[in-house]
Amino acid sequence: MSTKDFRLRRDPFGRLVLELDDDVYETVAPVRSFPISAPDEGIALVGAGGTELLWIDRLQDIPEDIRCLLEEELASREFIPEIRTIRHVSSFATPSRWDVETNRGDAVLLLKAEEDIRRLSAVTLLIADAHGVQFLIRDMLRLDKPSRRLLDHFL
Image (tube, rainbow, N blue to C red; front, side):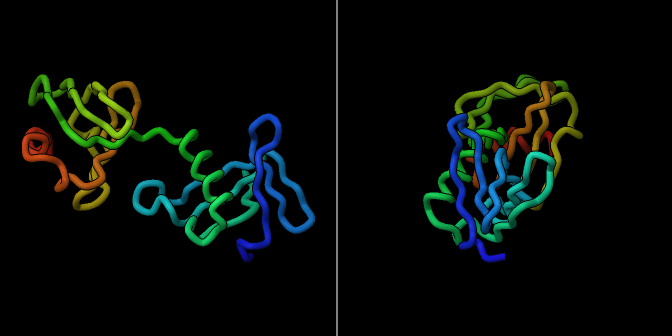
């Protein structure tokens, strides 16, 4: 289906409404297929029952006003802070308390076990803290030297 055949807007309650051909679907939600490896590709708009209503190959292919609506909605639904700097770790043995700087501000995470650091690719890591929050290191080679040195103790 062409992505030019639809409209997306918010209703008075702030929920997304999809107008597709002659049909109107209320309370739709965008879902990323690959939220970490390809966040701007493969977006499904699903209805209240979880049925896929529309597939968007790439966000850049849709009009800017609709893209802004989708990005705003996705940002409100997803919370994966991205670690930019590891300032301090309490211990090189687990459990360990990490003081980090993220794209959403300063944070403290508690690493229960080294198995809570998952390698998603050669340079991308996903770290689960003791409270269930997922922290992302998109490219560990981009971390500063002190951060990489601290991280190396756990890899």
